[in-house]
Length: 138
Image (tube, rainbow, N blue to C red; front, top):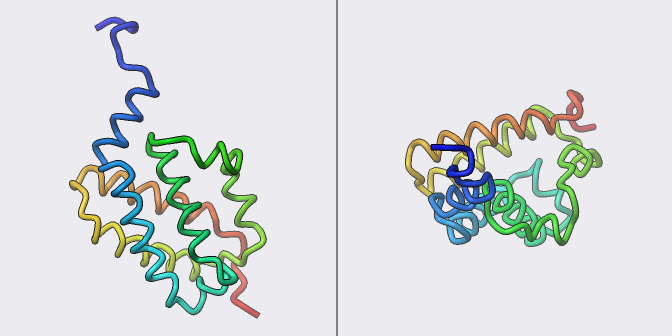
């Protein structure tokens, strides 16, 4: 196969998005995730009553990251995850809670093992990168 015969990166990402189940998968994933966040005493207050907005933003971001529509960037610009999370106290405890809710959401979505592993690896790396303080809540 020559370089010109290979699918473009955009095509490969779109195929990945489709293999993951497309919009329906990401909608179910983020809905389930935010059901957990809504009852979390550490994470819920960070959303200042805007859990629906958070759910939509996360869904759009994940869809774009995993090869789907670029709606997130069109509406909000570059993700700049560290900058967008800087106003919040993201401690190791907050990270662990975030990961707990995301693990439950991934389990509910029940992706094939390879896709689950890829997404989980990404979520762990991303959550680790968001930690911006080691200080517990005041």
